[in-house]
Length: 308
Image 1 (cartoon, one colour):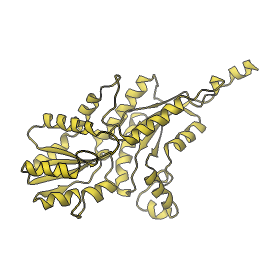
Image 2 (cartoon, rainbow, N blue to C red):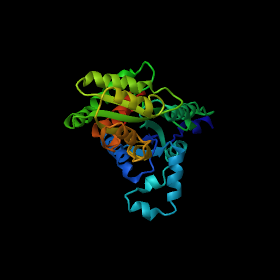
Image 3 (tube, helix red, strand yellow):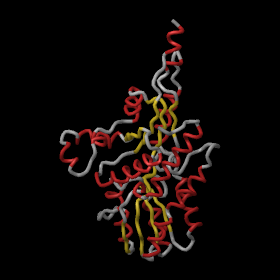
Image 4 (tube, rainbow, N blue to C red):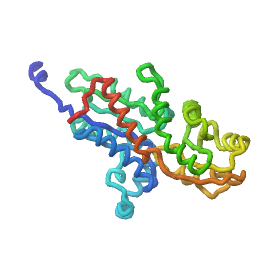
């Protein structure tokens, strides 16, 4: 009986799972598509799928499945209309013989969403079957968010430096407009957003000639603190951009909104001339390519060969 089991082998195909926070704005999906396109180009022949980690965003798309034609007319794919949570997406991959999976989060930093995702992966990695041959996964590993994470294998400041380099065109846009560059990140109420300030420090050091600011929708520094600093510095012209993977709900409702409590509204009330560019970081080819770079590094860390 033991010899029979020894001869059996499960399929062990390889896959990449892009774990997005997600967006409910069809116009913002282009940022996610751009990231995927860069990953597919970097790893031809490797199955690449997506999942959304936001329960709220997935529920919105689930309700929209009742009228799919309307959303398809706006260019929404079947994959987004049927988008799954992380565990469901992993389960489907495993059921189809993909037992080596590299999970690449597209979250900007190590906050609540990334921490939860990491705990899921760690739990799946801990599964031990009586017969090793029937283990559900050969390997399932998680890569780093955009601004890195703690640990000795990869210095997060190196990841921050890569991000700063990718922001060069944004600084040039601000220079062309003789404006201060103001980013607004999502942030988080439960995890420190200090790495954003480290990134801001590095960006200012790289471009000392241009005033640059960074505020958070959630966390510190928020709207009040950031606007107060901008006013104190005597800034009169502002280029306002979301520091988010997609320009979705927060970008349009919290940042670029005529409401006096929005970021644009508050800055205009203080006498600033404000121009907004509502594009997600994922639309920037340099940023999109960073995720493919993260995947390659993580695969090498775990001895995974990502080729067809």
